[in-house]
Every structure is written in structure tokens, then in C-alpha cells.
Length: 298
Image (cartoon, rainbow, N blue to C red; front, side, top):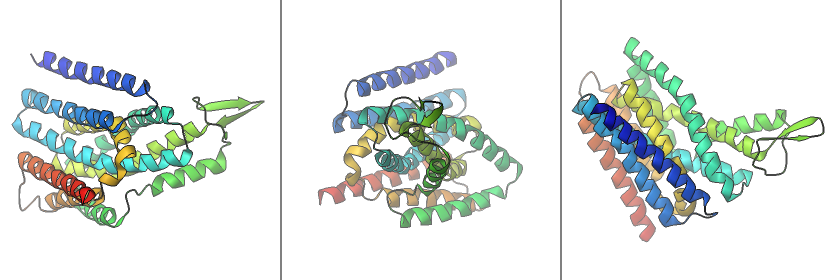
């Protein structure tokens, strides 16, 4: 029964990823309706492991997964805004953009997983780390509320350093490296991929502490991060088409970070269970989206 449930979720995830990639690849331009539909599909697929954790563990772990996944998903929106800015700066063709976002997501998970392992080990070994993470989240919440729609300064430094040290081809090609005579040149696609992964690493400083504020169960954190990253491709297409509709996304993310910080800092005084965290995170995200859409219509 348990093996069948895990296989079912894995099968649905793989089929959806292949189908969405095929649909995106068949058209040079993605419509708002297609991007919105796939964003919703991936949101729902990302919630499927909730049932698995309920079956394999208990209701508390299932609620913790759902809460961590929703907050990772919310934080990934700000990440995608930076993706939009970086890809636009490299002036890559639309047919290349989805491929880059997909590859960046996979590389980002490979980078995040060790960071999550270290974070869980520190949390279990040193209890005061909770207070350090709480203070970090307070600072990040303040910076996010004050910032514009993206704060990819970490990636900018990486890209500038690479441009100073590596010969870069001026032509956009599908390959990562091209040869001219006896010299090799990085293509803009490779530079952009490096910048996207660097951006995600910078944003992991937000998302990993936020996840640890809710749970420090390794399977919960890894699975939530994986499914949040799998849904970045349609989310990128959606935001490219409708950036102006999410006017208050930074404020929404700042509120989510603030709530996570307060939970960590008050952990010795007030115990907030996973179910309560899920309700609070979901409500805050829904209010932020509703206010953004209402402001758009006004």
C-alpha cells in the first residue's frame, strides 16, 4: 500500500513534468491561460506528498509538509522575479528560457540539499540556532519589505566576476561552450544558467531558515524544496506574462518571513503546531494574492 502510494505520486509527477515540457516546447510563446493552468497543476501536485506523509508518518508531519511546501512555494515567487530580470538581461530567445529555468531548478536542488542537511544537523545539535535563524528571518523580512520586486544582487556579483575572467561569445546558441580556433568561449546561455543557480543559492538563505521554522524533519524539508522547485517553469512563464498583477508580492513574502521568525523566537514560550502554521501561511498567502489582484482591477 505504501509503496503503491509513493509510486503513484512519483508517476504523476514524472508524467506531468514530461507533458508540461512537451507542451511548452511545442510553442514559442506560452499563453497566460496555459501558464496559469500549469502553475495550479504543480501547486496541487506539490501538495500530494501531504497524503504520503500522513500515510507513512502521522497527521502532524503531513501538516508540517504542507506548511513548509506552501512557504517554499511563496518564497519561490520572489526567486522567479529575479529569474525574469536575469534572463531578460541576457536577451535569450523565448524558446531557450524554459529550458534554462528547468536546468537551473535541478542544479539549485543539488545545491540546496547539502545546505538543508547542514541546517537540520545544526538545529538538532545546538538549540540556540533557532534564535539565530529567527533574527536572520527578521532582517530578511525587513529587507524584503523595503526592496523592489527582486534583490538579485548576489547573482550580479557572480556574473560580473565571470565576465571579467571568462571569454564570452556574443552569439546566443543552444550550446554552453563554443570553440573558435584554439580558444573556447562561454555562451550567454551558460552565463545565464550560472547566474540563475547563483540567484537560487542566495534565496536559499531565506527559504531554508523559513522551512526550519516549521519543521526540521529532513524528509519534509527535502521533499518540499524539490516540489517547490519543480513548479518554477510554469511560474516563470506566468510571471513573465503577468508581472504587474502581483503588486504586493514583496509585502506578502515579508509577512511570511516575519511569521516564521516570530514562531522561532517564541518557541520556548508558545508552541505553534504544524496545523496552525499551515493555516496561518495559507491565509497570509491568499490575502496577499487577493489584495494584489484587487489593486490590479482598481
